[in-house]
Length: 412
Image 1: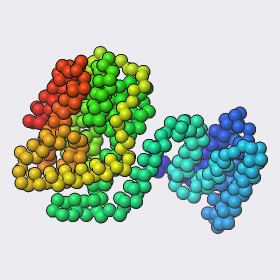
Image 2 (image 1 turned 180 degrees about the vertical axis):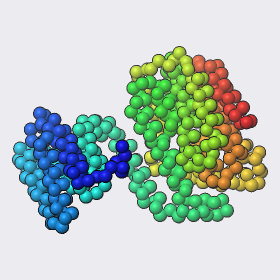
Image 3 (image 1 turned 135 degrees about the vertical axis):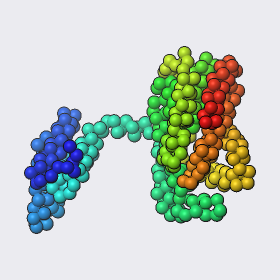
Image 4 (image 1 turned 90 degrees about the vertical axis):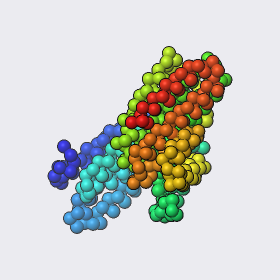
């Protein structure tokens, strides 16, 4: 039953306030074995929540002073508890702040939409119960990566709102739209980056290839190729990782297209899914056994770094202008030729420069996207085979199969 379909009468709200207080109190009670000085437990927190509910009810019937007075009373009690903990050389104010939040949750259960009170009560309990897990994540988080994330978010929050959301020059360059695309691409890449750092080195190169492909399949190919050159016995597993990264590339591009301009989805979705499936089939090899070594893709760069984000934006604008000029002066043939050339580098800026215009020629531009991907696949095969002479024949065969798989889909 949906929350909005229920008539939330005062008695029902009372029960919600009681249940949410009991939920937090149950969690606090479970920690008393390890921590002697914990403010509140399975009885205190429900009472605090009901106290907040009662103060809110009195507030609603005209006794407006009761709500701030009730909050002041709970704050006074938690303050006394905090002073007692400090004197006992027990530091930390989580329990006291949680009690204040329980009071507010009980009051909100009476005054506002019930989902707000439920969300606050449940999140409060989760944050209290998952202390060990949260602390372990913080311990594993690289300070450099955290600072890169903070800097990128600050620049995004400061720069994006002041960028003009209008088109400039005859090439229709929209600064706000450009940076919006950078944010989308960087966010998707950051998800893959974090997952690869967390799980890739535990499960082996095959998982590093899968997760690294969310960031950049070209970078993964170069990274595992260098690894295979230094450790020839790992060349088979490295080739599999490179092919898996290329297979994920099609899914990544499909997601970006869906997020930025869904008009192209009907033309591209089945073609990119077919190519991804072909890539996964080609990557199947006897080297698929997980390797428990500590191998890490060193070349993967945090997508939330400011410098690569700005570089991506500049390359995106340049390719947008070049694409516009090529289509205007040379026509369709020139665009397909440009698609072949950009395959030697990062193809994301080129693809996104094609799809950013809602009035794009979907058939022509979809063909150009597939040509760029085919060109990029050829280049990655050349990159990897140059690093691994022992697997050169197998590399050429597998990448050739993936390359030729593009042709019928381009000619459709």
